[in-house]
Length: 282
Ligand SMILES: CC(C)(COP(=O)(O)OP(=O)(O)OC[C@H]1O[C@@H](n2cnc3c(N)ncnc32)[C@H](O)[C@@H]1OP(=O)(O)O)[C@@H](O)C(=O)NCCC(=O)NCCS
Image (cartoon, rainbow, N blue to C red; front, side, top):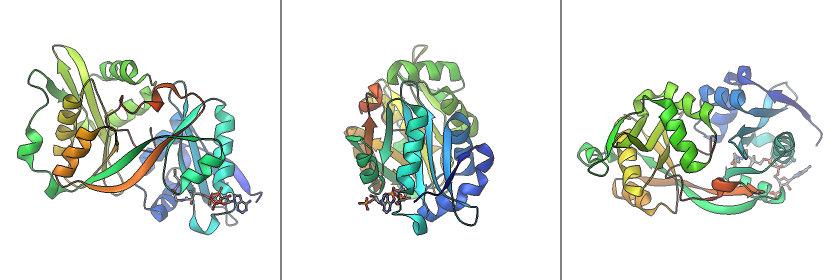
């Protein structure tokens, strides 16, 4: 199918909500504004002028994060997602990574992506968050406090994950300061958690920490600050996180597979990030 494609910008954010709702996804217009402002998006225009398919790429340092590959049901199976994803890859020109749903995975395989590792989306509901358990802190000498110092969080993130994602972290801290916590040992940052409101549930992530106990302490702290349902996307390799979520009423919502095209460096290593920012932000 030929079809008309056009670049998407932050001004398109509000108009893309129907696509997200149709798919049952969690993004809000604020998420689209971040992605289309910090990254680059392309949309397929339907016969009535509305956008019926999207794909976007976010620069994360050495690689592009491919996200928001979404096609309205009536327009699927005609090569729209393949075409839009290829456009994002061509514009980016280097290695790329993404977290694929079961629907997207065959499309990406055909584009040359390979599987890296599995992740699970966990859902926690308010009744599943007993505050007595959640209040148990991280390690005894670790202090978890509000992440007021963005440069320290960005520096820690870059050192641990090798990613350069300052605009994303800054946006999350600004949008949900009540979910932003940093762990400190002495005066040194040893981990952080950020989050954001979603259409369906509050997304908690990324959780990045020096060790699993600190990561768990951060997750607990952020989850306690949320009133409604929570989504958290955890690489399956983090068995401690998964075990804690399962023990506290968390349910597995869906699976993702991290995939890569080319050498994506640290994005291929599931040990570095205890919970990802989400399939849309990497
Ligand atoms: C995943 C998704 C984006 C795919 O969109 P799509 O536009 O249907 O994808 P494509 O048309 O490019 O590829 C799908 C199929 O159509 C086939 N196809 C490609 N070009 C075609 C063409 N010109 N004519 C007919 N069929 C074509 C592809 O070979 C593919 O075949 P398959 O069924 O064997 O996989 C869409 O199903 C969707 O939005 N799903 C829900 C959201 C989601 O999970 N997104 C992925 C996030 S990682």
